[in-house]
Length: 368
Image (cartoon, rainbow, N blue to C red; front, side, top):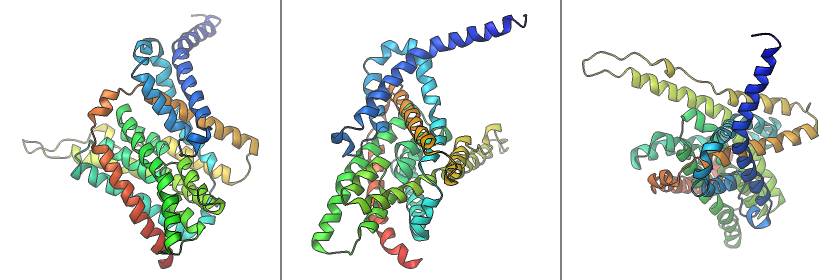
């Protein structure tokens, strides 16, 4: 092949890929645009329904009605939209800085860490031993409840090798109980204030909300219902919890690899030992490291405000595209097949966050 023909063949292949991707990208883009617009409506915003959750709901509706007839032409673009998830997790680092930890204090950081770790460990034990769930479902429901809702589910999915139906189920639990939290938490605060059971300041309430409520949008809604001071502290606590996503993914990757090695070395019937599978090594999620790197650069204050704002908007778009694609490729029959057990698991975890999370927020600062 001549050197002059090489660029032409490259452009031809690029054109072919574009033709394959365009229908699916346009479909996911339309869902993402509708979800981003709907998330600004007061009726939805006040209930903490973010663009991410709206995108997967709309994607699920279309995926189980119209999309099967379009799948042949849209599958490539929809798959590409799902792949943009990892870039979205990296850019999520533009939403917070390491300085946020300083405002929270060691007691707040320790509370966030204990709430996160205890909720996730409880999810694994209950999911497998009590509810008999698939390990991937337990991992994703636990991550969504423990860290930052839909974004944590999306970030955990490639590490846990989850299926689209697992992701949809986990996100559904985040939507249900996170929405309940936006109404229940302010009601409990005002109820407590009326009866004088506990002395709770707006800042203490904000820390409680930020360390236990699922989605960032839901945290904002629950905080704003009490006041600006409560909302500010809630967002800081939530952002520190979000920052724990990267080390969580690294530890999870190590733990899954270790579990695989143990399984690979289980004695076979003949008494011999099976060799470790090549894929059982630790996989370090590059997007988790990228998340920490971007947050670190943002912490230095060297990025122009306009660039940060543009990056946050791009991040929201990429994550919303991924959620739309996940919804489109999730068949409701597969979600229905999961039954009520994931919902029951999420209900118990919600009760744990509500009760144990409050006790940790109440007592831990006194011990540190």
